[in-house]
Length: 125
Image (tube, rainbow, N blue to C red; front, top):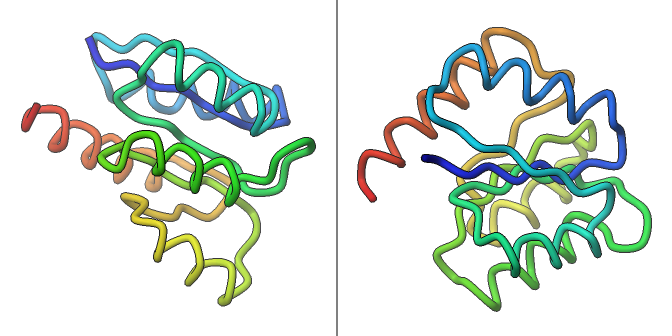
């Protein structure tokens, strides 16, 4: 079973992300966090295989959450799903060692690409 943690302050985005991934992945368990602080706690307690993170969130920004996740687990597989498309932000995120950066909104094509990435990475476990 692949465990995916979705960290996004929008319940709507959480639901959309889950429903898209559910279409193309089998044997997946999901958990959710509404901000970066809650995301860190869930990551530490649940040890997901993949963590999908929004950047623009209250309490703890996605960038800061990713930095802390990577400090605790350098091999953590993090995917950024965000509407923040500023070049300097994207460069900062890519330097943190994330698997990929996907621009919101998530659509069918982007979801298929994400699921292909997750599927190929999961087989290597």
